[in-house]
Image (cartoon, rainbow, N blue to C red; front, side, top):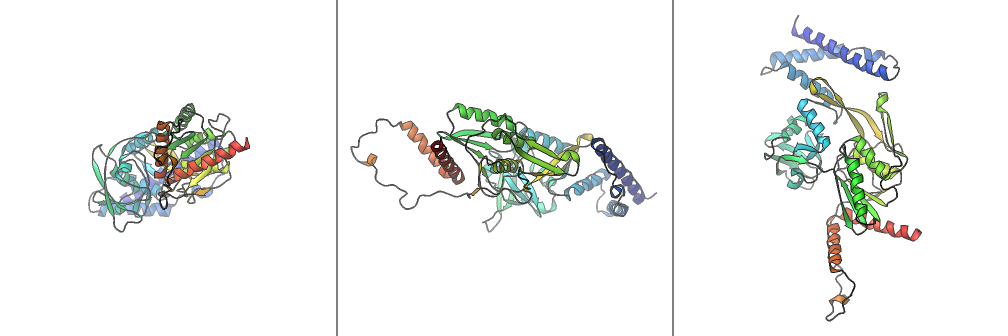
Length: 435
């Protein structure tokens, strides 16, 4: 029996086992109507695959390992579905598990494929990529001296991983630049704190979620409690800018921290277990506090779930620019030998039934990133305190005044945050007048 027939028979057996496995699983969950089309194997395409396989084995310039060739075929089969489905070998599967736990090795950069290059979705806060100046929207054309056009997304990601301390040169196309730029990034172990918080001004809190990890919801509640211990809060900014997403349940937990009832998100797919409804419960950390959510083009997936839920429920004002538009759910399906596939199994929808796939969340108030500069003399008129021999106030706390000046300067460095806090102050004033 020649190689062509051997591979064809093996593939037919393999496909039949796989189909039976899926049918058995579906039948165990819900009575399934037999699908005659699904039972029919695409024999002509399998013959084509076997022929290509045989020709590669016989004619490629160098000998090719059977296992690698078949594994690459599986990779290609998944990569052809959509940008987010892929095959993971043992090392990649372990890396994914570590990534969602909050510690992983590499550059600290979230990327996606944009043929023929790699697009930066976002650099993660306080990582080598962010510190080196990599920005959301950058197109990576080369990794060291290797063009990414010849790589799959997985190969590019693997190339960017490495030992801590090892540098890598990223050649980047950036909007507004006439020529490619080169950025050297030194690899490191990435420790990502998914939730950060502080009092941005007296009475106004700031929470930033960098990505959605397994424990993000619990950490958010803990930091909200800390902010409230520091003083009475009149409003809160939830910053989801450049947050690439992460664990679906974490997004539900974050939404539930601000919503006491109603739908947070629901998903729909082909299999019955892909259809899920997530609703808020009464165990809510801050159900009433005025809330502004900041988003931008780097806000994706779980970030958009949270923003969409809070927007549809009229719980928050969404401010910034349109989000990324990733409205699909990926399920990790473990395979034998510690391998897995990440497969897109559903689309998710906001409470009002909106699919944001390739559309994104539109902010209620569009505010682009800008630099705030005073016009003319900047309002530097002569004041009473500038007059020689003026009387002191007698009540002013110099330390407090200095701190407020620093906070105002910080807000001017981030125009979107400045606008968010200004809106919170207005909402707080109106709320007090209504009481």
